[in-house]
Image 1 (cartoon, rainbow, N blue to C red):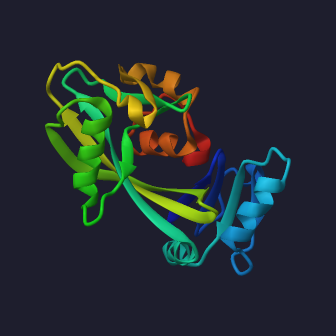
Image 2: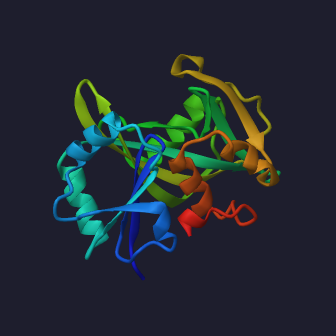
Image 3: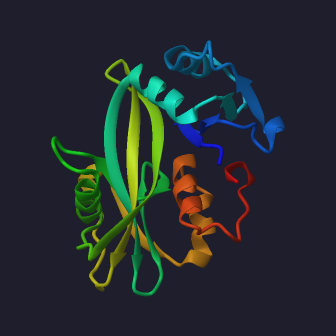
Length: 214
């Protein structure tokens, strides 16, 4: 099966793929041989266009992703999509968008441990179970003048308690809520593309077609 990876730059998406995307007309193709992440980032930061989707046709998408990551600073983070005993899912509200709790890994911390710690700190609950990894996402931004790729490990989690949610205000989180899976569309209306990717992988968008992720 052809491998696919997505790199996010704000609302823009670069798809690394071993086969042309189904809706190729929605994308602008970039050449693998000449692609440089730093140059591309500066180009789209300065550009005033509505193009959101790009793709690079790769012989080996995983190897090309590793090459891109090596060209910049890598920061690792982890988070979790938490499901409670009622079947609802946990979301936080930060920077005027719905998000899933996550944060940077501490030195020497394993992704799964960091994911649980971040969820507990940001939402004020105690996770009962951290399960399998859902997906890794890749987000590009600048920090102190350096271009950074943040690799986030996302895990399935379970919470069996009924404790009151407590947003970590010092981290800019102003609200924490449980959403029934039938109301996930509310989150989709105001979230990040990488979060859509996590929800898609978790099979929460079956009734909400997202053809660009198919």
